[in-house]
Length: 432
Image 1 (cartoon, rainbow, N blue to C red):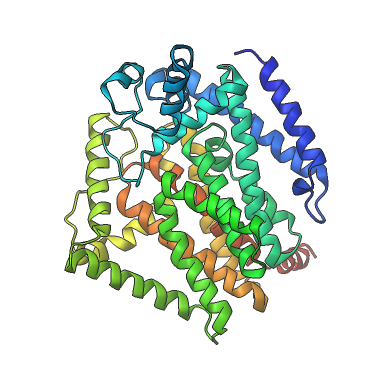
Image 2 (cartoon, one colour):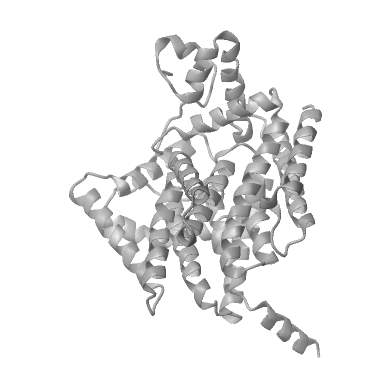
């Protein structure tokens, strides 16, 4: 891999970070943002080394498979510019005369699909667009992925900043969780989902304060990308956002109450539409996804399968499976179940959650009035997302990557609920 083009685009992004006011965080030294960007670049390099040396089957390696298909399809521009743009915009791609472009791809279609659109095709198309800048150099794709995900993470930080003000711990926990660094280092769904989630949350909370074109634009971009890429994130985001808005408007004595009522109401309505009228197969799709994921794991001999069994889509099955689902999404992988180098960081992250939870219980810091509602938003969003992941995903590798959107909200919220000054005081007393 030639380093000239990647270095050129690194310089371009460094200049952009230095010059553009978006990257100037109030009360945060500029070098910290550059250091975070440097960590992201290092993580991309590590991701490339890991998949090059430890996963020799390039056709199934996530960081290569979408890129390789994009290289194949980008070649259509040399045969017909019109056909290239048909592929890029999804126009008449399924006609017989277009088939020869797709016969050498491996991931244009896949065995099971649950998103409203084919999200793997979106990733391939994004890689095709970047080909105009990279000329087929995968290093440029890593650099641009780092830029996009950094932008998304900083939007999430700016959302927290609007409630907490300057907070270096929040910035570090949002941007530097190891799994987030690693899996957002390539043009993968995690990278674009981070960008989309940042746009959606920043746009939502900004629109609540000031509804202008820029904030509406952020909302639209974020929601549209989430619909295509990670619909399950949207399923968690919408009720949490609605509950936050209701709580802001009515200011109840118990700020958690609207979250409970809205979530219960949503479950009842969806349950009636699913189990009663069979018009929206919401729960059925989760049961189907779980069964298909188990079958796929068996087919490809996955090494980190969670011992889950397929189950029928009934109310009791979902109620019964909920505690285990949330536990699996939170706690896996265990330290003693590490099967490869990629699982070391996720296992430590799972342990970190329980450490932070213990610190919150022992040294709890009461949030300010304006922060309390946002805390409940973060917890509600995280809990719904954990349930979705745990109920439908039987492979630890999938759990690790699916729960990346939780890190900036759940872990950062726990960090901000810890009385760090109290811990310092206790430590000083213990040393005397």
